[in-house]
Every structure is written in C-alpha cells, then in structure tokens.
Length: 299
Image (cartoon, rainbow, N blue to C red):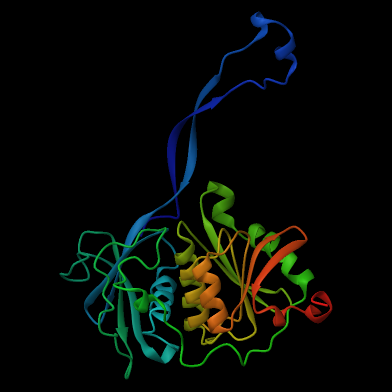
C-alpha cells in the first residue's frame, strides 16, 4: 500500500487582481500572469480488490488507508456482514502474495474469510470496476440496490438538538487531516447524539469514506449504530442512505442536497435525512421527529 498523498510537480499560474491599483494605472502598468513551478500534494487514488472466501467480488478505486475497514464496511452494505462474528479474518496483500485471481496485478487486495454461518448472497459479484464516484456500479437491477435490513430504524427514538447538528460540519472539517494537505477528499464522520466525534474517515469516494466508518464500527463491535449521526461532506446520495440504513444509523446529515431516490429510501427505512447543513440552517427531508423541539417548529 502506498501513502494517502502523492507529491507532484506542477505549474502555478496567478493572474493579477483586476480590481487592484494596476487596473487604474494605464496599460503599461498591467502585469502578465505570474508563473512558478512548485510541488503539490494530491490525494492518492488506487484500486483495491475485495475477495471473499477466495472469490473476487469487486474492484474499487479508493484512497489507500483503512483498507480493512473499507472492505468490512462494503460487505456490511451488501448484507454479507452483520457483526464482527461474521468475519474470521481480513488481510491486505498484493496480487503476487494472494495467489491467482481476477485482481492479480490490479493493486492491493482485501482478502476476506467469512466466519461460520456467514454467506455471500447469490449474484453479489460486481461485473466491472467500481469508481471512486460510484458505490452501486455493477448492480444488475434496482431491486439489487434497494436492500433494507430485517429490523428497521423505527425503534430508534434518539433526538438531536439543532444546535448540535449545526456544529458538525465544522467538527468534520477540522478533523480532515488529508483534506487539509490536498483539498481533494470526501469525509464521513460518526458522532454521538450530543455531538461527540467517534471516528472520521477520508477518501476520494464519499461511499468509500462511509464504508470505512461502518467497517470500523463492525470491527469495534458497535453495530448496529443506534443513536448515532453520520455526517458526510458533499451530497447525500442513494448509496449513502443505503449504507447508513444497513449499519443501523438513524440520522444522516450532509452539507449538500440529497437525491430524490435517497429521500424516498430514507423515508421508507425510517431514517432522518438532513441536507444543506450549513451555518445555522438545514433542510430536514425525512424523519423530522428526531429533531428536538420539532413540534413547536411545525405549529
């Protein structure tokens, strides 16, 4: 596995400020673009193959790091794993050390051995590469991606103060170490109902960041994540709602908008879905009963 950042030589071009003093001093005073070569840090993106009981399941593009959590969280979202007891072992190895298989030579491999009783659903294997922007690529039909756990979220009666929610984006941003260096990563943070940060994961793919959080929770024996809030950078897509529901998370908040299918699934599953969480405001799309003092707000 390589690092989470890659150093690259770039050409930096800066144009003069047109509103500055040179803008009023005549054509002779106008300076041209300033050019300088410099080193820059980029967020790393590499393939990771996931193999279960010796069978290649999928190949995803991710930022290296927390790969065991990523593999575990991915399999929670697919309904393969429900608790730490479902896993006998997860090891990370390169193609030449993991034996022959579809992922050999394609990058690192997460080799998962299931525990007693855990099985791989028929048709789980993805037929093509999953990009860092797509967590449901390779699914054969809508029915394949509309998975809901056997027990829903309706029994989770946690309530969250609006003030706590407004503080989460700032807490998430402050904890993004790799983003601070590259400006090129999504983040997912898991919080308690009173705003305590439990864990954060970063990745070029928002769905990978969530998988890493869920995988951490699985390995820590915390699933289902009752009473918790999942805060994500970017938008709230269908796939993120799906992963939150499968992990038993009752509240999902995002700094940007949800999709229509995300809101539909959230409502069906009993998830509280919050979007445009910025500054002192937010939009609550589903599950408003979990927001404290909602009765007064609706009257």
